Every structure is written in C-alpha cells, then in structure tokens.
Length: 225
Image (cartoon, rainbow, N blue to C red; front, side, top):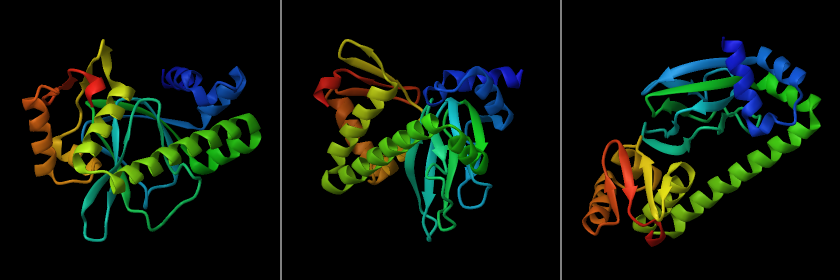
C-alpha cells in the first residue's frame, strides 16, 4: 500500500514530472514514508541524519532555537513544499526542528546522499531543483527584508495576504483560511510580541477587516490589506 502511495505522491509532484515511470519506481525504493500527528516533532536539523522531505498533506513549522533557548518560527511548510537540508550541505551549528501544526501530515523523505545521487543521474531534475531552491531562498530573503524595513502592522498585513494567496479559499474578495496557527505563532512569524499581535488582530476584527478564531480566519476584503 505504501509503495503505491509513494508512487502517486511522487508522480504528482511537479519536481519529478520529468522522470519516467521506471525512474519514479526506482525513486520509491529510496523514499521513506511517514505520517505524523499535531504537535509531533519530526526532524531535528542539527542531530538527525541529513534528509530532504516532501510534505504531501498538512502543515509544518520550522522552529529555530537560539543560544538562550528562545524559539522563533523560521518558516511555515505547506502541502507540496520541500524542506530539510535543501542546500545539500549540513550545518552542525544549526539548531532547528520541524513540528506538525495540522491534525495529521503525510511526508515522503530521502536521505540527502541518495537525493544527491538522484540529481547527478538526472540533469533535468537537477536544473529544476536548483530553480526551486533559488526561488525559496529569494522568498526567505524578501521575508527578512520585510521584517527589517516594515512596522508590525504592515508585516501582519503582508503575512495574511501571502497566507491567503497560498492556502485561502476565495469567494469574490472574501478569503477564508483554515487556521492552524496560534496568535503566538503569528507573533513569532512577524517578529513581534504576542501582545502586539493580539492587539493588531483585535483591531482588525473591530473595524471589520477580518474574523479570527481557532478554526479559521475570514478576511472580508483581501484588497483592503
């Protein structure tokens, strides 16, 4: 059963569409498959065997921990995203982990060494992967730029717009987002205090910009963000 699941998960993923049926079947041999539940930590970047993951279902957060033990959400991983040792280099100084946000997730994974070998044997795949990593690094760079140059309210608006674009269900100008983040999570993502994030969200509810609860966020008019 898992072999069939792995095949269709990989076949449907855009990065592997250049591979033939036989190549996909060979890829299944080196692919691990895992399901996990909400709150489960699935990977420690600094201590586990280097891997690359493909998220097929659910949502995950990447959390960075500094020397004082303070945690910051570095990235939110959504369905179809790759995460792990994407640069194909290990960093012993990195102290990060991946934690499940949604009720359950499904993940395919590859040992970094096996994935490197796959890229060497498939130049078209290597090119696609290079473009993917380049776009992801650009997005992270833009995110850091926003943190430095914009105030907390603008950062929150930008985050909600990006989240709505990626995962929201749109009805005219109204967007409904399945909410798997706490207010503290949102505060960490936009690099502000929980108190400030809560205040900003309350202000948006008061003026009718959005409705926020544990299950969903409803943005009444996305064009006003």
